[in-house]
Amino acid sequence: MRADARRNRDKILQAARDTVAERGTDAPMELIARRAGVGVGTLYRRFPDRGVLLAALAEQYVHELMDALDDAVAAEPDAWSAVRAFVVHSVGKSRGAIAAALAGTSAPQARQALVERLDVLVRQAQADGAMRSDAGTGDLMELLNVFACHPGVIPERFLPFMLDGLDRRRPYRPSG
Amino acid sequence: MRADARRNRDKILQAARDTVAERGTDAPMELIARRAGVGVGTLYRRFPDRGVLLAALAEQYVHELMDALDDAVAAEPDAWSAVRAFVVHSVGKSRGAIAAALAGTSAPQARQALVERLDVLVRQAQADGAMRSDAGTGDLMELLNVFACHPGVIPERFLPFMLDGLDRRRPYRPSG
DNA sequence: TCCTAACCGGAATGTCAGTCTCCGGTTCTA
DNA sequence: TAGAACCGGAGACTGACATTCCGGTTAGGA
Image 1 (cartoon, chains in turn purple, yellow, cyan, green):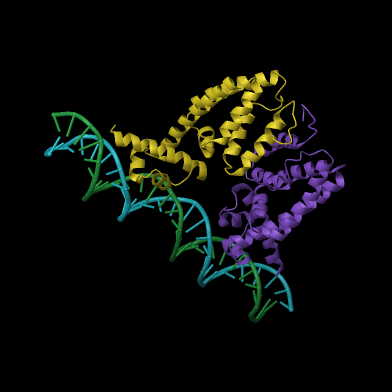
Image 2 (image 1 turned 60 degrees about the vertical axis):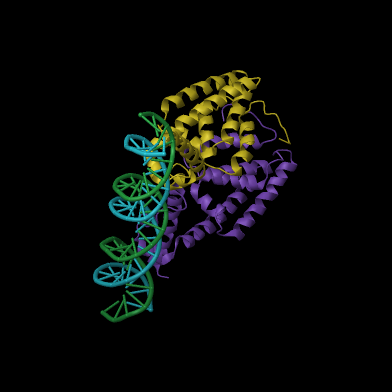
């Protein structure tokens, strides 16, 4: 693969990510290409159809979530704090790409690994008495999805409330 | 207006509501017509374009929300309970129609009236120390919108958590 | 019952946004 | 410097919708 070809591939992936984040999974291919500073021809040469492109995006994204989960576990003092940090972080970056990565049928094995990993943490948080026990890992994944589909101020605004709702201890912090 | 014409008008409105609930504000007109058991011609004769149809829907819906608010106030013992009941009830019925009714530019005066009414209740709930004070009426309206755009199990599942997050007293009820 | 204005259905037309192909021109790299 | 690999984007195609139009049907008053 020639150097310029690889360079373009990367640019396309990044552009796809941004575009999908803003316009959803069915964003125009041409928009993605233009955003990458590339012709549609180039886009299609690299990714024969939308499905392939989305799969690549999903793969990449799930891996990043995995890393974010590791970071959260390393940085936070307990399981529930880690879960919280992970969710906040994940919702904060790359919006719609989450939806593409998690909701779709792409990269199911990577997704599965992520879910299992998160599940361990969730169970721990519940065992600690920190997280309410009538909500589970699946709920969190769906939560990510819902918020991923609503770029804009909404997630930032509601996420803290939502997380407080999931918190069994429910600390009340008027200014945050 | 002939009897059959009126009958059809009502059927169209109902079909539009269901269809918009499922497929969003830009659901195909033809789908709405078919669902109403009517030809597209009839639909267009009654509602010259999508905007008019949506406006009619909005009007009707906002009035229903108003009634729901009244009912909630009458049935519940305090302001916060009424707010909660209202939100749950509103999210529960006629999904996407909410989005059409509230997000759009249709029926702004009716919407305004609803918001003001709800606002009184919200302030009361906050004054009672029952609802957290860093979230307001606007947040609730947006909340309705977000959930309205996500038919399916999601709202039912998350709404209770969300509302608990907004509750200053935060009663913990493992089984509900 | 009969008449006709009002109403109905849906085929037909027009529009538009997007996808994907193709090829003449350009750029790496050996 | 040759030529394999790559690039851009015009344009042919497609499908999904909106909207119009008119021959056939019907409600409901005389």
